[in-house]
Length: 258
Image (tube, rainbow, N blue to C red):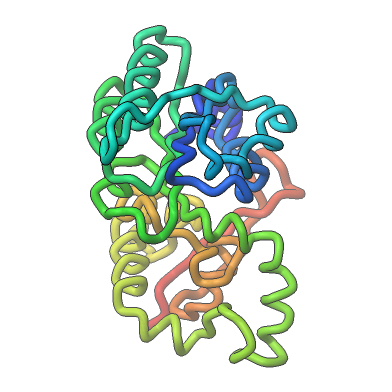
């Protein structure tokens, strides 16, 4: 698994399907992309003669995104998808990138994601929760854009939840434990990485969860960080150990409660 330093130095191509992405999330989306690397290419595809893309136009200069014009030659055919796919393959063959960020809620990019991964590159997908599962699973990591919209408010929501658990979307321990899919995922990930003494690194847990479910995100359940979600689930003992190379930093370990 790559280190955080390696990830942040990755050269990324960000390709956005304007027909299936909302302009309002672009700032939060680029902040999320910056966690994984540097966006050396930022392109957004659509028919810019159409009025339905007007909301994008003030974002282009502000975030240095290159608009790619693609006319809709035939009614009912999505020529934007074809243009994005052709560009992605051209960029792939330059061997100048470590990964691609594909922003769309359209399943038409499933094969593209698979092809890029076959070449050994990382694919980060971004789309709405309605995005078909095949495209989500074809990506190394898939992030719901709804979570990006809500991230800025999560700190306040969690504080409010302690006073009134029913007032927002933060799931409490009982609700989380009733989510059998989530609990099964977390337990399967834990069992795959736990040492003989039962302890496992929280960081490794996050990596294993991502391998099992590319779209699993603590923000979906109202928590900014995986550690906060694990504490809320309340299935594990948690201990903090000083990092071997930096005593000021802490490494979290978990162990399933008996």
